[in-house]
Amino acid sequence: MHPLVKALFSPWELRWEVLIPLLLFGALYALGWTRLRRQSRSQKVASKWRLAMYYLGLASLALALMSPIDWLGTQLLTMHMIQHKILIMFSAPLIWLGNPYPVGLWGLPRLARRAVTSALAGDTWIRRGLGVISQPAICWLVFTFIYLGWHDAMLYDLALRIEWVHNLEHLTFFFGAMLFWWPVVNGAPRLHKSLPYWGRIFYVLAFVPPNAIAGFAIANASEVIYSHYTTVPRLYGMSAIEDQMIGGAIMWVWSSEMMINAALIMLGVMTVQERRRKQKQAAAAASATSLPLTDQQMKAAGS
Amino acid sequence: MSRSVCVLLALLAALIAPLPLMAHGGGVAQITDAPAGPYRVFAWTSPDPWRAGEDAHVTVAVTRVEADQTFPITDAQVTLRLFWDPQPDQPLTLQATPVSAVAAGFYEVDHTLPHDGLWRVEVTVQGNEGAGSVSFVMQAAPATTNNWFVWAGGALALLAVIGFLFGARKRSGARAVSMQRATSSSVVQE
Image (cartoon, each protein chain N blue to C red):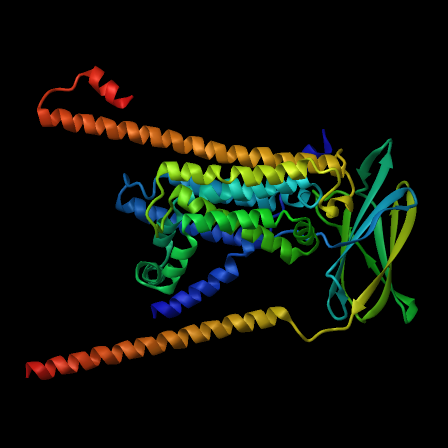
């Protein structure tokens, strides 16, 4: 067995500082979901689909931070890139898809629930502040700045050398990604008018060029950019420069592909919604003229 | 009430939120691929700089190169001896332990540094293939009384107190206005 595959199947490190918050947030969501489902089983806020998304998001956080990927990230740039991609491309959007705000809110005790809603419902500084930073352009810029900034050679090496800087890197990546995906998923609390689907498609696709340029530059660098990786033993059958090429390619290709996938999903949703809208319009027009709509007319309206 | 709960929640969130994202820090490389008998040794130290009265951490990786391939040595005895420059005849002897199952060939040790100044760290590796040692020098800074975590905690607590007082003042002001309105409306009714 290849040493890297063997290492990936090593036992997970159950770190309390990761496990406790994950269990806390998981329990809060479960409580809220159960309370909401008790009120109505058919409602959309706490559906089974959203429950699955939320826990997949938490599981991906656990995978990134407690599995062997975490340790291997300090030895291989490739694994470090994979860890960051999990945090950015999976954990953050999956958690948003779980609709954590209203569901989690129902998991809180009444007093705390009131406090949170009053902080976000009225003209409070929290709402004003969130309103400013959750503007799509700001979200995009903040995340792109964080994402590209951490790939600077000095900062990346610093993160690998000093633990609290590494923590800060992961924190900012995760919260930056939460900010980035907020207008895309259109998660609650909704503080702005929802972006139209074409706007969301443009928003995610706009991230592709800066990401691809940075990934391409890393993959094609003639020397090792992140010097930390020249100070570790090469136990996994690839040199530091080969590792950098693969790591850069992951950033360049995988992240870009994820954004394109997100754009394609939204294009699909947009098309379906448009078709439904046209079908409704056709049905309304038919009922107004009191003439039954033929199958052919329905199909024509749908296409 | 809601404001104070908000402050409390924000503080709790500030404490809890960073926890899921803790990471491994590698430390500063002191030895890279140095020969020690039949082995190749790597060593990293943290924090940077070492400081008297605080924990000093050393991570050691032990490998063996055979036919251009590097293998981790998982069953070595790794001993560290720390020689303080003014007393080189009284070294601190520490036994390093394996880091984790995934970190094959990596060993680590923690120890509170008793003095500042120059320290020579000697890493001795004993394994089935033989033994060897390497050393490096560290400069430890004097002990400090400035604990940034205490300062940060104090600043957070101060913010919470200010938030609470500000909220209480605002609420008492609002209460006084509403009482005044109630009194004046009852006077008008009379």
